[in-house]
Amino acid sequence: MPLRIVIFDDNNNIRDSIGMLLKTEEQFELVGSFPHVLDCVDEVKACNPDVVLMDIEMPGMNGIEAVRLIKQAMPHTEILMQTVFEDDDRVFDSICAGASGYILKSQLNTRLIPFIKDLQGGGSPMSPTIARKVLGKMQEVSAVIRQEPGSDYKLSSREKEVLACIVNGLSHKMIAGELNISYETVRSHVKKIYEKLHVVSISQVVFKAVNEKLL
Image (cartoon, rainbow, N blue to C red):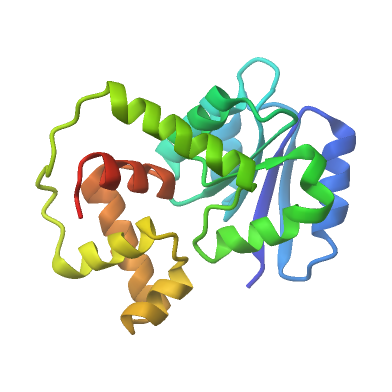
């Protein structure tokens, strides 16, 4: 079954270029392409994508706010942000809003396909420089926001094992191998972890686990 993908970008040429690039992969299917995000929730519900490619700079409403709305409506939809600049605050805000990864537009031709495949495998793809910025921002926030340590989210022992694997950067497939369980079982545990921790993305899971000392 092909991976269903939707694009949100106000630049027609970029949308067309991404569409042509996606067509080079038989397992990808472009099911929607839109120039703004004002109707993003309805459009995503209608297209039912597995992955959304979201530009940050959008007319009327920016991509970060669109991510929040989409993740509230369809929390298991993966969202890959794309932008021109490595802006610390926007990178961090995008991840906190629920984005699962981040790609620079200058890297679309070389990294988009592997980044989407990484998302499909349960990863959070981003360039090393962006990953460093996210970690740095998380450390800044941890230093100024006081959290209740060890909050009881009633995670089972297996869910804690899966959570530890997520924090260590393992994809769903790698977690399945590490814990000797099926891929679908991993997905089920991850879904329950999301629900219990009240989060909508892997990045938020990691932030909460580290900041609240859940492991």
